[in-house]
Length: 183
Image (tube, rainbow, N blue to C red; front, side, top):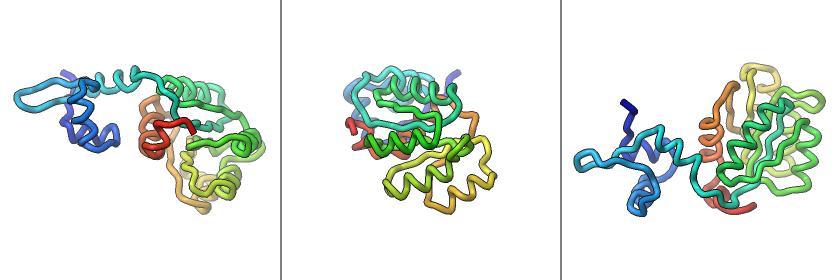
């Protein structure tokens, strides 16, 4: 049997206020089942619902990773949710894009040829100190990670990761007002 979550658990899972869950429930916009007098939420149904939500214009997100499969995973996952995703395969190209466009957040690989992620992170923080950055790495204990940590706080996603990890990172680090508007 699938795991059923309470309203409080699904609010935590989606990183929204419990009131938001009940407003969506009242509007019939979120999948739920009534068990006795309580509403319960199937995690699998919630995940499917997240992926099928109507696509609306949302924030611009920059993904900088030298691996094409990673860039494509981010693009596919986030564009289905209505985000505009711009991908760069090098740190230098990522920096150029950041200077040309306004992004609401950045996903940044640490180990890349040429300019590594720690150096790009330092330059991004100089240009846009408040921009949320999620570092994606398969090497969380590396010297490059230590250099990035010395610059400023950031989010971290360890490789390998899934579509739901990407969605959780966006829901966690992107302010709600930015997530729902073109930026």
